[in-house]
Image (tube, rainbow, N blue to C red):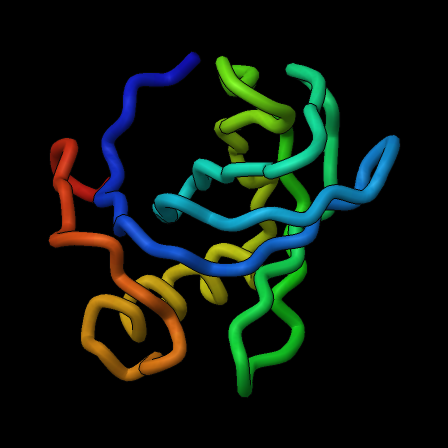
Length: 124
């Protein structure tokens, strides 16, 4: 796994994954190259390729391809947290950059920021 270099925003964005099954959950942090999600009642498999749809009110076409890089089952109850790496095209990279900028600037009022931005090095 590559070391993290990208700025990660702590957010709460509804998400749907499409792979072997459909999964609903929430994005917990978002960076240019990936995201961490929380699924309440299901589990994903490391290495699984999935479609990711971000559900941000007022925005459409927020569908991305990604690969599950890690998954950790919740200790109590069903569900898991998982890390996904985007399989970017030039267009998808621009979309994620725009989302990050709009969340950071406060332009997306319907996206809840969970806390301040954590920086894990320079964006590259």
